[in-house]
Length: 131
Image 1 (cartoon, rainbow, N blue to C red):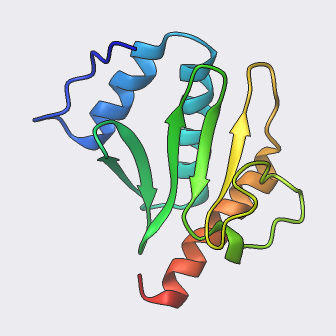
Image 2: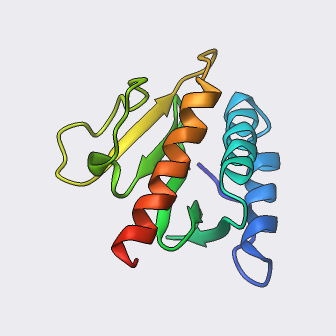
């Protein structure tokens, strides 16, 4: 896949904006939607651009990444295995010792309330760990 997003000089937020625009399909819409939920759930969240093109949201440490693939938007939580997930949002990377992920496919709905609670829990976990 040809990547046209410029990766130098712009702020991470502008680079994420550009990625969303570049996708121009359901993946961009989904990434924009989860981004808005993350920003709403954790005021002061920091947007980062890492690993040559991966949006990352942090608050006292990494909360999650927002990767886009052909058939999924993947939200990977670095410390997901340490989070309670009563709504069962985690549906990928379930065997790892630390990470957990949410794969969102075209047409799938995300439980917004449960997702924001999970985002807040990840931010709170970062406060407790000092990272």
